[in-house]
Image (cartoon, rainbow, N blue to C red; front, top):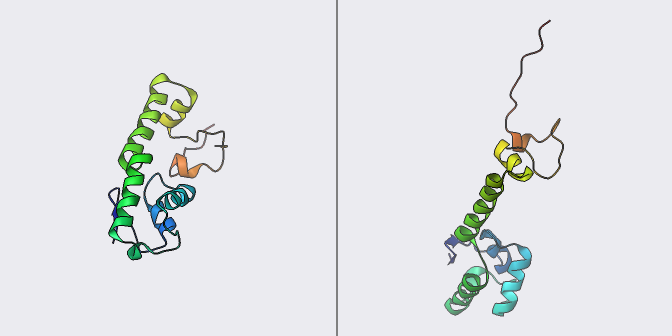
Length: 121
């Protein structure tokens, strides 16, 4: 099993297997295969050690992935919360950020229902 950027890649087509790395999607994976001159439809286990090293080198030098990317995203969110902007407040409250309705739906972001007692007369 190949290991790139601290992630064990499954034995799938190269362009699909690369998407298991946080920060690499389908288009980035296709670009990486093109730069490394590797056929995207070959399987990971069929690659030689030199080809794997080339993939590692390309990803390490040209892309921000895994830990570095997660840290950057977390710092961006923290910055928004610190300056007190609208998006930062929504992050702090655990509500949707991008204008979605919250009267109904939004359960993924808000979490499990919290029942509120009915109004007494």
